[in-house]
Amino acid sequence: MNPEEYQAPQPTEESLVQEEEQNPTSDRQENSSVEAVAEVAAQNSTLDTEVDDSTSDSPLINTEATSLINESKQELSADDIAVQEQEATLTLRSEVNSQDNQLEAAQRIAELQKQEKALKQEIASLQAQMQQTQTAMGKLVQEALAGLEQRKQTLQLSIEQLERRQERIRNEMRTTFAGASQDLAIRVQGFKDYLTGSLQDLAVAAEQLQLVPKTKPEPEKPAIKDVKPAETELGTPQFAQQQFQDTTKQIRRLIDQYRNKPDYYGPPWQLRRTFEPVHAERVSDWFFNQGGRGALRTMGSRLQNILISSAVISILHKLYGDRLRTLVLANTPERLGEWRRGLQDCLGIGRPDFGPDRGVTLFETPEALAQKADRLQKSKMLPLIIIDDSEEQISLALLQFPLWLAFAPDPKMMRSYDDDF
Image (tube, rainbow, N blue to C red):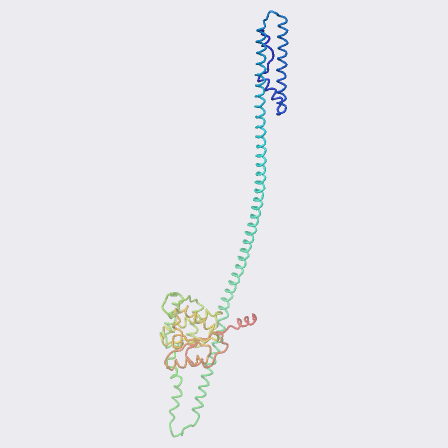
């Protein structure tokens, strides 16, 4: 065999791969495979020509060699064609698969991009909502703080007004009460002196009357002189006289006890509230200067008047026990209700202690109160009449009893009330 036959160029796998890389599309690869087959056929034809040339040059080669060469050429060309066809089909399949994968990847990428856009939009909407909520919360907090600040300012103003009012009331109590109460006491004392003088004049006029013959003695003269002492000895309290030193000491001791050592859980009919010096001064004035029969300037509030009355009731209850009966006069049921609640709170008594035959009785008219006090005196009881500051005038029928306490309204406060209305 001639070695030149095997040195002829033959199609290999590397050449096919290079050709496939140069022609990436499926149509070009098919054309390349067809061209490769044509090249192989051309090469075979060149081999035939070369062999023919060689045989022509060397007539010694026998026919067997030529037949073998022809058979090998045919086998070689058929194998190469089959191999190239298989490789072409493989490349076509791989390219189709790669195209399918690329399409799927492109679809997947498009879906992911859509999801990304949706997520970005949702994030943007959530951020906008968060900003709106933050601004709304900021506005609410600012409004709440502004409201609280305004309430604080209003409360501070009201507190300052109440403090100034309290200070003004205290100053009025300290400065204006003494002179006004003294003036009222002088007026009451003048009325008492007037009544006493009138009775004396009546007695003198009765003495001058000649009702019996001159021959008979007149035993009535000493009887006329003893009328007033006889009336005072029927159990009438005399706190201002010097012969009642023991009673005076006991009253002062009780006032000091209420002022310095208040007992908030004491027995009934004992004062259970804080007793200030101004209250003690007025109670002492009523006992020792007015003799238990007189008027006091109002304290400015009904609760303060009830506190002074409770101290007086507590002291008299210590002195006279169950003989004492308190009669309260006020012109409206609302004021009487305030007196009832105030006395319950200051003296520790209850509803059973209020009634016609009990320790405290409430009245709206002075006539009914005078009738009740008269009946109590006849039954050897000791009535204590307390008159509210709402009464502008005091009935003369009430002044005949041994114990009465009236609260006179303040002219300045009455004028201010009229101005308000």
